[in-house]
Image 1: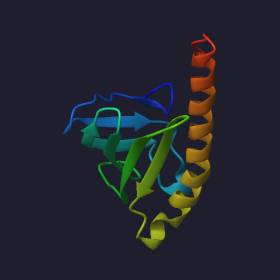
Image 2 (image 1 turned 180 degrees about the vertical axis):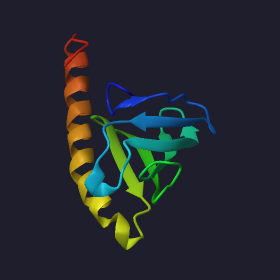
Image 3 (image 1 turned 120 degrees about the horizontal axis):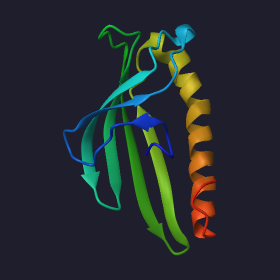
Length: 123
């Protein structure tokens, strides 16, 4: 998870609370910590966790959920990513930032998977 997304203390256990950490972004009122909790794990199918952020000091102004789903196909496996919970108007800037951010993360995952498929472990 750290190689694909960002530094974290994730464990694949339902109920485990963990954090993704990155740099703070003042313009988004974000302290750089995503406070998460594993909600669901179905091995080789689904991973879902809460994704809550805020300006710091225990204040949370975005409560959302990320769900990764794998679906087998004739040619391999398709990956679906859903990030929901942006109902509040004040979360619009964060939503727009994540649109770009998730694309970058998925491109990084693709690059890492291709490198692994060709016998390389770091891309």
